[in-house]
Image (cartoon, rainbow, N blue to C red; front, side):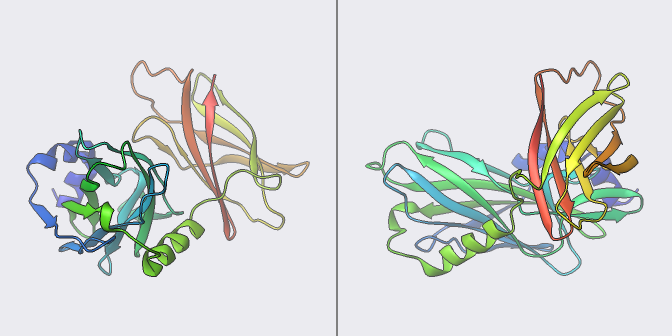
Length: 280
């Protein structure tokens, strides 16, 4: 069995390797940017801007896979694991949000994944409880990098946020570029108009308003953890709306959608829209 197949079939088990995988240490950080941590499949680092008066810190995780390697979106599809950022507890710094640029779909031996085969920047937002305390960020980052084999990549980063002064031009440019690559929010000309689980939760029925001139969209729906819907059935455009059914497949045993939220990403031409589906 290849390492790729092993990683594919047991991707959730790789999270348990956090305590065992070799650590790449990236300490002694520069003012608002850590050194790169590297391994065979690529490199990564953390950047951060100076804390704002309310304790908000804007930053990002940068991942640069080597040529021919990929890393994963927040729902990787049928293989891989999503990037994970864990902060040391008790330091008064919490991770509030992490955002993901638009991924692409990869097909490898019949396995469909969502991720990036290029440098990608994941913007995040931190919150500091007390700006009068030492502002040291200690973060443990775990990502998956895959080519013919898949390598769990873990690194620890240390960043002195108290030294992030002034107007760091490079960091601002990196963050601004990353935010331009994020999916847009629903709007009047690009949105989900209706959705419903049908056939005993066997199918998801969708109605979408697409931008003018858009061809058949790509649709990815992230249901329960690790469960992504890719396939489209019965597509049709009526009264300006794109209607389609997406087979749900086998849900986890005893899973009840009521009260849950599923994520949806729609890519239509050069635009992408992301939102959530609430099953009340």
